Length: 192
Image 1 (cartoon, rainbow, N blue to C red):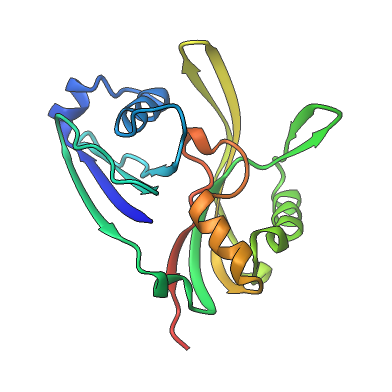
Image 2: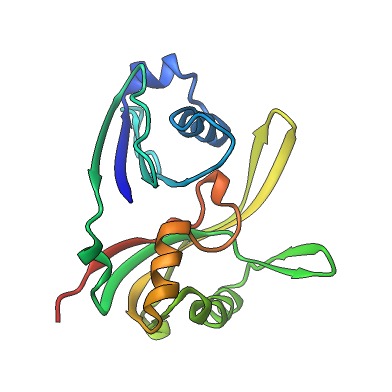
């Protein structure tokens, strides 16, 4: 896997016409021509008008953008061999019932949802230390119309319980909405 950081200063944002979440989606997709999505991304929240950064995890090297800067490095296999990690992940928490999706909005329900799902992702997080932020519903306006996503960023400490599932979660992302910046599991190894 390749981890890249795309940095767009205000000039690059103007050249790419980056003014909303759909524009970020478009910029990232343009770095990977073709029909198959083999990457995940996380757009760092903008703190000012000084530009923006996007973290990208991909199977292939992204193209160099015509504006801005891109730094890439290979993720070593040993990075995924630790037992404990600090983590952060932006998710789209929903419950599907009979082809309908219901957003989960209350904090206690968000924590229960995460606790129930985590075994599928190959890890167990310390729920007592789980922090929630950026909760709410967001609308992304694209070419085909508006899309609504439930948003919550989960931060905490995890222990790997199923290495194969954990590696799959890291490489392929978790949850729904991965095409729009959800599901990238950001990890920091905690050395035992």
